[in-house]
Image 1 (cartoon, rainbow, N blue to C red):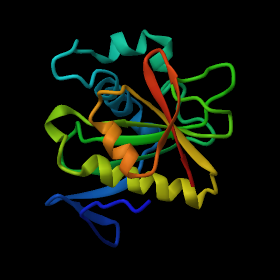
Image 2 (image 1 turned 45 degrees about the vertical axis):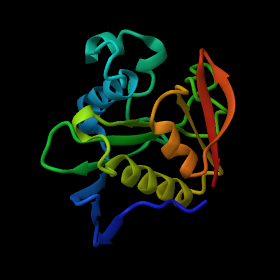
Image 3 (image 1 turned 180 degrees about the vertical axis):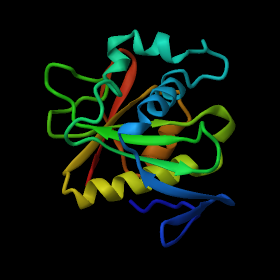
Amino acid sequence: MTVRTPIVERSGLRQSAGVAVRVRPAGPADDDFLAQMLVAAACWRLDGPLGDVQSVLARPELAHYVSGSPRPGDLGWSPRTGHRLAPAAWLRLPPEHDRGYGFVDAETPELSIGVVPTHRGRGIGSLLLVALVGSAREQRHEALSLSVEPDNPARRLYERCGFQVVGTVDGSHTMLLFL
């Protein structure tokens, strides 16, 4: 399925919905930043409970998406927009003993995207998803998985990109994209 995203790329500079961002791989120095983006991913509802890094990392079912990073196979992207809470997207290869909500198998990386409310709806999440899917293909992964609640607006983005529901865990859809 073709992703229809308004992206222009010139030597690493990408533009999405009129916002220029420089997409770069995430690294070990991004641990705190990724923890903040995990909060944005886990506490996505505008009318829902707010979270903070300490409370989210205290929940093992969420903390494993960022704890101990970088691990072999981790891959992440973050735009440089000049704002410290810009979105981020990352992949982790989950071990069998530490399954995430979107776990399929130990060879399928699980995707996470965190976008703070002030950055939503600008196409930056789409840009990051396209970059991460491209990197996963370059690394010869066969598929990507993720977990999304059925009423999360991001679900439509994942469906447009070709992700399909393959199961449900604790009320959240597990989605899979074959590369």
